[in-house]
Image 1 (cartoon, rainbow, N blue to C red):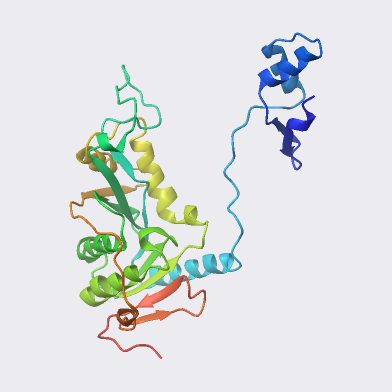
Image 2 (image 1 turned 60 degrees about the vertical axis):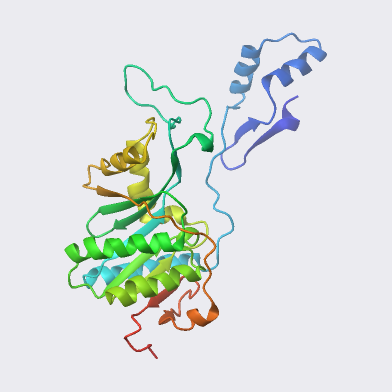
Length: 310
């Protein structure tokens, strides 16, 4: 009876149904068998059926240069670390509604928090946009909490702010900077604005040679900031309503781990406009060199005061 609705994994012989117990019960009644739902459940378990949820494991079609890019990122990271140059992992964490809304998870308390029954955006104080910068050498992160759009200009402004403070303190002799980023979002590998802003606000303004390596499509979870910083921030505020931007900043700053991670949090009040375009003429003025290996994901931007490499 359940065979037409049976699915499973041929590698481990696990099976599951795409129908409900009441559907099976109705079919049994049609055949003259009055069986309760608990009995049906026990019979299914005896035949190795289980309640299962979707398992997020498939990463889509592998890009042919996927492994090559991972190897190249590790090579670039090793060179920068060996020469004493900063290596950063950057990304934007999931945006959060700020207000009296439910936050998933549980927390030890005497009485549960009372929150709104609906998460309507119009009831929110705003939407927090946490852009993170993770210093791999020092196991230290800085998170800039924006209040408007997640744009390339927002991302580069935060990187420039980090360079003017943390970089000067930890790498006073730095001449190069490596950035590991996802392939999409505000730091997209295709974004002209991201490249143009890096040229003006970091390479030219701070006289740094900036190398950017993007992770292949579907591989963002391997970006170090994802599992070393963002996951820990989520643990810090799990089950705690984010009622104000000040509270968001406090939770982020309280994040730490037994391995020594520390996080600084900054509130960004500047508003950013979406839809900014960069013309081909402006792109031609950038001192940018695309690498021979996976040029769609790897490039170096030098100060315009330096000659373009031959």
